[in-house]
Structures are given as C-alpha cells and as structure tokens.
Length: 494
Image 1 (spheres, one colour):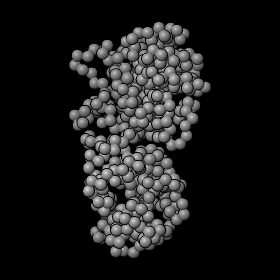
Image 2 (image 1 turned 180 degrees about the horizontal axis):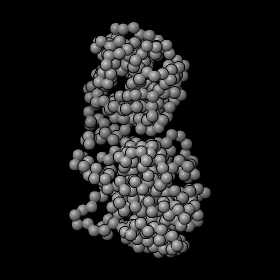
Image 3 (image 1 turned 60 degrees about the vertical axis):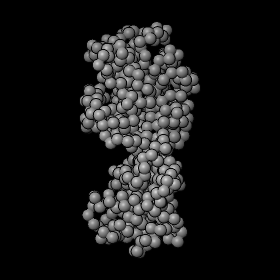
Image 4 (image 1 turned 45 degrees about the vertical axis):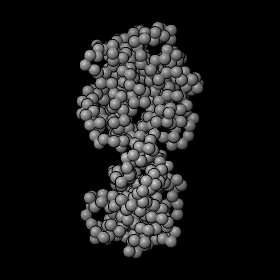
C-alpha cells in the first residue's frame, strides 16, 4: 500500500486553496501548469504511439494545461490540432503565457474538429465547472461523447462537477483522466465515476505539508483510513474481550438475521446472540451451532435482554418487519445507550416520526444504513448524494451509510468517505444484511462507528471483487477470513 494521505479527496475550493498555498510558498503558477501539462502528455505517450491528437482548450487554466500538452506532443513529433473556446486575447495569466508559447495554429472550437482525430484531449473546463455546458462547448462535448475517439480528460471530464460527480448538461466518457495531487469526489461519485475512466493522480510538485494543512474531510474509503482502528485480537484476548453483539431477528424473513449474525461472528465478535420469537429460533441455529439465541415476544422482554451490560452492540432491522415492536425496540436500545446499527425495516418504522428516532440517537453511538428508498422516507434533504448524506448525518447525530454503487459514509462532524471498490455483482439480495452484521460485529469489538461502517463497506466490496461474477450474500460471509488475511498484509505497509 502506498503510504501517505492519498485517501484524501480535494473539493474544488480546497484545490484552489492548495494552488494558492503552493504559489505563496514560492512555486510559480507557470511551473505548476508546466508540470500538469507535462504529466498529461507523459501519460498519453506511455499508453499510445504517435497519432493525430485533437486538443480542446478552454478559457481558463484547464485550457492553459491544454496548450502545454499540445506543445510537448508537437515537439515530440505528434500531429497536433488545437482548438480554443473563445479568443486568445481573452486568456489571462499562465494560460495566456502558454498560449503565446504555442507556435501552431489555434482553431476555434468546433464539432468538425473531431474529424480525423485519433485521440482527443479534453482541456475545456476541469473540476471548477459549476454551470451546465452550453453553446459550442455543449455541442463539441456532445459530439465527442457520441464519437469513438478515445478521450483523455484533464483533471475531470468537462461537464462533470468536481465536487458531486453530477453531469452538467453533457460529458464525454474519458478513457483516461489525469488529475493532480489528489482525486476529486466527482471521480468516485456516479455518474462522474462512469465518465472518468481510469483516473491517474499525477504529482506536480505540491508539497505534502501543503496538502496536510488543508485537512480535507471528504475521503476515499481506502483501508489506510480505518486500519489503525481495526480490532485485531490480542494474544491474551478471550471471547468476553471481543464484545457481544445482539441482533433482533425476524419471525418470517429469518435469512436476513442469519446472514447478519454470520458476518458479525466472522468479523470477530466474541459472542453473537439473535433474539427472536420462540417459534423462529430453531431456524437461526440449524446451520450455526455457535450462535446464541434468546426468545422475546414483547418490547419489555427485549428490554430485559438489553439489561445485560455485556451485550454492548445491537442491530435492529434485517427481516424484522415494519411494526410497532421494531419501532419500540430501537428506542429501547438507544435508551439503554447501546452501540446501535439501524437497518432496513427499523428505518422504515420511523417514516412517520423521523425526529423521534433522531432525538433518541443523540446519546448513543449509532450507524444508519439506508438505501435510497429508505433514505427518502426519513430525510427530506435534496441535492447530490454527498450533500444529502452529510446533511442527514448531522440531522440524525449519527453515522449515515447511504448505500449504492458509490456508497457514502458520513459522520455528524462532516467527515465523509466514499466507498468505490464495490462491483455491480454486489447488488443482490442479502448483501445489505451482511453489511449491517459486519458493522455491528466491529462495533461490538469497540471500533468507532464511522470506521466500522467504512471497514465493513470496504470488506464487502473487496470480497465481492475477489469472488467475481455470481457472488451471493452467503459468499460474502464465507469470504471474510480470506479478506482479513489480505488485510493483515496491508498492516505492515502503513
């Protein structure tokens, strides 16, 4: 594993702060632009042999990078055609300086420029775009999107919002995106992730101390983010040192609770108990002799189970049903100040009274794990996924894990991780139950809620990727030991 803080993602405003800090520290903008353009040209030459290249330059610094790329490729013998959105006379600063250094023709941006191009370099706008594309820029990007010309994007594909991944009007699908110093959230959030292709992070000479002063709160969910908090067993540990997870099991859909209990046990929880109606309990232990069970029929009986101080982390929701009992045992668990994972039916049980849930969670460590449908029933926030998840975490005073291909894990203090290692094969029945069980198993062992949610999401993605097509929720549980073995090898690299 590469050392450092490369799990950090830079928001657009933070990117500008980095540029200013580097320039104030004595590195000129000219030098940064030369390094950025040189990095893109190098990546192009590493992947392709000389062929006709079209450079689309915009009116700002992204376009200035394009002029540097064009000059380097032309000097190395590549056939280069350069187009510019707007007039050269309107360019300013380092972009104008590099436009003046370009000794070739500058054509106006046009759709026809794509004719005969074997590669197109998109240096129109980059991460700073905040308005939908329009006019000739929209027409050119739309034509590029419909063409078969390989696209190399500078920083982010034009039309992709660097902070949110949203497409502003149109965006081509890049085969390669070269960004600088750190990735941007838009590289990991859909639909921007699908438009970015392979993302290469180029070092353009920004000192690590500058990046450290920014202290970004948006992070890529890499193992280095949470491995220092991972609860590896100690040499003298016994099962009572490893926590006791309690899972509220359903009466009809027992498979959900069974999957969750398997995940919690596989991830090292010392003891796992499923509490369910007496008639359902045999279904939980038929293939799991190491699982503990307790009967409960009423909220009061569940409260008696909670009174055991050794049961320190509770999962409610998988297969539980949307009913008053599910609703009330969530409140009882929060009142008992247990670490709490609220999933599935337990979230929907509060669709008429979300504030009641949020108020109850104020005094406990909690993780909420909604998919988009469950999220919309609890939270009325609008906007992009990143903004909605962060607002929800603050509202609920809990960690919110908003599931999807680009799962977002947000803490109430604003710290947020984007999970991006999950393959599409993970979208199958029961994997959410495994995820919830993994989180409660880690929290039972004392892992903080944000790190536990991040670790569980990453592990599920890693296992599904390792397994390949055809993965089932049961395979995720069975794959946990192998994933932990792979994870152990990373510990030595941090």
